[in-house]
Length: 339
Image 1 (cartoon, rainbow, N blue to C red):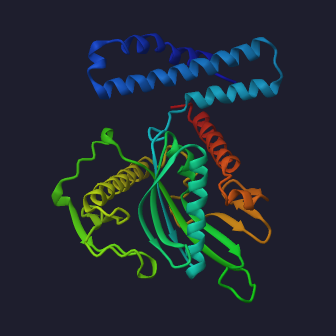
Image 2: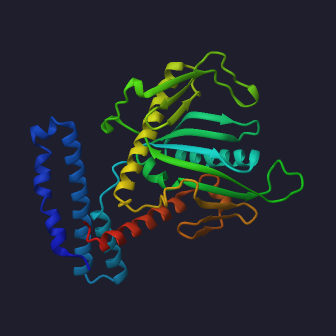
Image 3: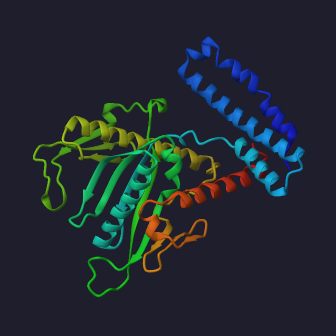
């Protein structure tokens, strides 16, 4: 049962926050204005959800509708992920399985790309190490679109595939794997100014699969953040300057993600999510092609539509992951009294 007094107490701030949006002192302070705008959006969402809940109760609606409205109120009380609406940086690495693992990494890249393109989001490849059979030993790319990180954040982890490889003459089913890591793109609000002394920059000649598309100038860039050992590489642009820009953007995203994971570890991962144990090699999903089956092991979801999923039809899967995560966070918040 919803604590009405608690809701009214929270909503009591709405009028003052709304007034603050017109305060010249707030308007002149960019950081304060963004925080006030965020508070206003939070309160308006809660106000709307609570109004619908009250209407459902007063109208004597069925229990299913009342429960759904109650869930919306609880969801509105949760603090939003500050990175939810950002672009997503995604890294895919081939794991065990040789050439077949590289082909699977390529399939995952195309799967995410097609889904993104259908939503009107753009793909910018930061770094890739392609193989001769259209696979990737590794590929790092940015999905540019509002909410991209919030959409893909649960894809981090180990992905396993079971199928007859194109390279297999005997028709035997092989198992191989790839690892996916997703983190939010850093922006100017993160205050990630990195001293030059903390970065080592290495330049080298870019090259493609089988020696093709080799750039004979040192346009490829590798940056190492010395305090953390984090590394970013970019070689997909012909311009060294452009590669440096993209490489630094990727490095900042890695540093931001590193800092956030450290903070979560210190507070005991208070914000429960489907990121699991934090071990990104943890197997989260199996793609079984002979049975046209995809299973997400975290939420025990099995879909017999792998042929469509691998072509980018990810909406039902991603929605299920997000919904399950929301239920888990509401459960945890209720146990803690939304403190």
